Image 1 (cartoon, helix red, strand yellow):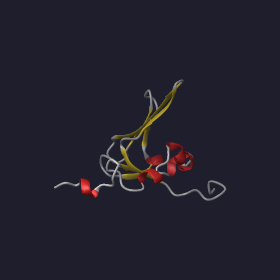
Image 2 (cartoon, one colour):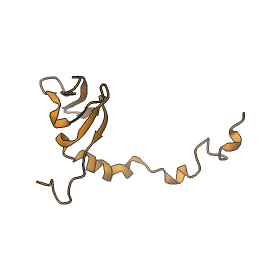
Image 3 (cartoon, helix red, strand yellow):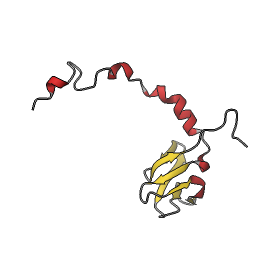
Image 4 (spheres, helix red, strand yellow):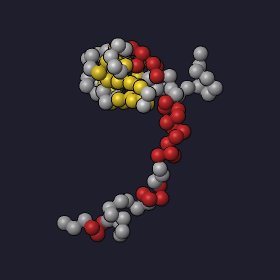
Length: 111
């Protein structure tokens, strides 16, 4: 079966309109600024390993390693590592399948 007849001409298989909708990474600045300033301890993570859900503030923290390590309170697997040095900060979250938080009220933290 030849699928080429179903593909838009000259797009290399890209759906019609993709080029008009595509922006560079700078377009995500507003959303990422909100994400990176959210109250992290209230954010609820879903563990990649066991599926357990818990606020980050309920995770077990090991701060004496070369990087800050958070472990799932249900299965004890490492879900997040954060390290920094003179060259920058690194955040690895391969143990978190989903990180969810409620929006902050306008004008403050709600306290």
